[in-house]
Image (cartoon, rainbow, N blue to C red; front, side, top):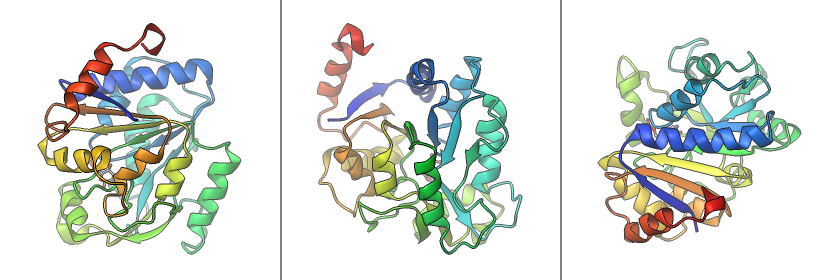
Length: 256
Ligand code: GLP
């Protein structure tokens, strides 16, 4: 079962997630990290930056990217990753890859990204958010649980959710390239974060509902090592919230 941690705020969640990443980097300074974009992981990246660790050996792979934005667009995930992750964490320029960033044709970019992740030794820890549709990465409902990195069509609901980052909803691309659910399952540790009431249904469906392509986030139930960190609002519809709190309060010394 996933370890579910229910916290009071996004900042508290960020501190816990950053602590998990720090422990990994103490063991493995050149760990390969999987970076999500969106608002949710920002407190984790801020907390990690505040720790002042030397992350010069870290390598990374972004989860997803829009297709069709002009090069250098401020809302491309390439630009977001550079702004929110690479610069504040002091990562080496070029150390974080984004799907489709190799300058080769889009067709085949998914397979090439998979090969590059494999060549890097696989992803040690993947940071994840979850969308209101239950998507992780940009794997919208209906995505194969075994899918690998590929081009997908965004749902209208996700485009509208993400319109807040753009000048107008029409500017949000219709397509994306995303790690698949199967790609995510290959990472060695998944850290899934969610905050706010708007995520409560998606979180409950992903953690406690049936494993189904209709709720892509439910694929985390198939993974042997998952840490879910949610605030009270996002945890609101979790049936076993009391047990998760109890298990966290009674974690053993070596789990702390
Ligand atoms: C976006 C991203 C996902 C992200 C999700 C939630 O569409 N592609 O990786 O987890 O939606 O976004 P946010 O964290 O801003 O709520």
